[in-house]
Image (cartoon, rainbow, N blue to C red; front, side):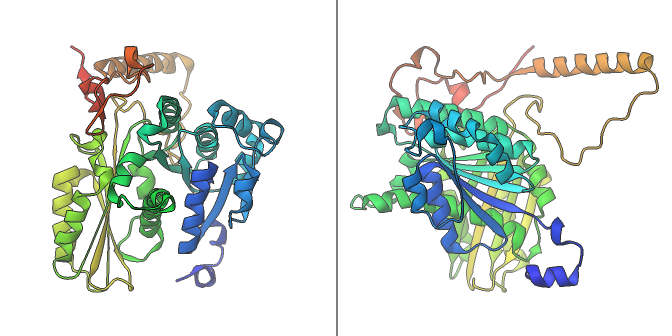
Length: 409
């Protein structure tokens, strides 16, 4: 049932349907949105935010916002994240208008440069403040791009994790392992856009495609209740005979599931979405769910969605999204949009002791665990080049790389 049929069948619900917007920030984010436009996702608005008039002029997206006119004069930021931040803050009112009334915002950006690193956190904060669920897909710079771009990217990533409901970081180094050495520059950069596009389409499919088992927006919001945590994301596809086994094998090889953050931990909350053709069997769904739960999480914390796509015959597509709280004792939990307001106590004498006791309990809970997440993971080595081995920075202690929480006695 499309929008017009839905409006006729349920008059009065026109303003209550889910509003989704995909916003590309900077050059890389704009390119990703341009690619998604070709897929023609219905019921989704597209927009770009940039400081470069030349880049925006070539974009086919209708909604465009040039920020920081008086700061950059439309000539970009020169790779300076602080200039990008000031440009976005100068036009904060226009950014707030762009995200006003939106329920779900996909934020796409390339970190390391000036506009993506500087503007993306400002856009994310505005969207979050408006009450939207904010999911960010960001690409990280190549190791060879230097320490300065790496530092700008990591600072922006840390800031995004504090204001987004989920941040999925895609390292360019790992993604390029999938292409041939003879690939052109355009093909090399297109691979990152393709992964971003696949991720956005997978979540869009959960919400808008009809299915045997639907994942609604409220369920998606509940899954991303921890801010500042780590987000696990993986895709797997299989077709033909034994398509289930092929899809699970492809999921196992997904490069996004082999980052150092996710190799050794299972997710606290997990969303599993399975997309197949009209002949998708319940036995296949159960087989996939058993395998995924064993690998990434437990049945008690797993939300299952099963979508039917008539264009898929003997093929299956698996999407796994997981979140892990690394703040300790749930300190990063996002405010619930449906949480009822606290009732006023009958008198001040009875409410004061209760509030004082709750404060003490919160302090004790926050002191129960210590996770060393202070934003200065490299410490003494912060000013040196990254010492990488198998994708891990060996200058960062093992307990930090693997997100181990230390129990205080």
